[in-house]
Length: 368
Image 1 (cartoon, rainbow, N blue to C red):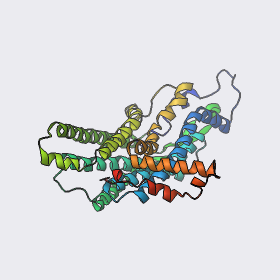
Image 2 (image 1 turned 90 degrees about the vertical axis):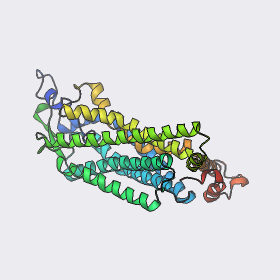
Image 3 (image 1 turned 135 degrees about the horizontal axis):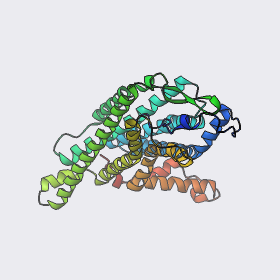
């Protein structure tokens, strides 16, 4: 999965050697880089939009959930995902923009290696945290009499997830680097991809296969766990006469279960294109599709659709959490009257803290 954001083999070298019948005007490496970057402009715009939306959305989640929600494992998981998503928006996405703007002029090998490494760590950490969330929800719904996961246990699980992500990602520091590309007019370009030192070895294939297997295991685990959760909830509805069973499951907030399922579905849907492209690239040794203007413009964008996962969670909370939604509505209303209608005495001394206090109601304090 870690190579999916790199430059796929689209036949660049094969289609760009030499001068065709002497009819082409000479173009320098910088000019050819400009041409390739122009083809990737949709990807750059896409990532730029995600950065703006993701930074704002995840900061709002961090502020609201930190200040206005009681300490529960659910809150801890939400904050953990928000931190990972914010780091992705601030580090991984700008790095990918640089990679698309400099497809043939990426000279800094250390930046390349560290950028790929951190990007892979954030992706895997997010996947592992979502699995931990699924396990916690499975225990609470399917085994309601067992001991619930404590915040300290959730914290240890998060640390373990981060360590595991680093363990799986460290080979990128060795495999990633600057790769030479044979451009037109016998010019050499340099891009951040599989290092030229290892590109013809089996190590990239082995590592990519391991990553693909890990993500496949994550998807299977999520599907199995939430299938059992949904099945148990279905039984709960049909077996109303079992009072003790019914009472214990009622203690869990169904809204939280729905939000967790939505977070999981968003994760899977966002990563499916990434998985498909990575599988094709892995088993075809880097080759994905023959070069064409459409392929060169769309493939880099499709390969990065997984970044939507780092932006979409605040919208899930907005739709699924009435308390979060009310806080956002009140804050928007306060901003509107403060900026657009400052003369209105009604909102003159209205603070954000007071706005958030108005929405601190009973119906949403049972997040567990």
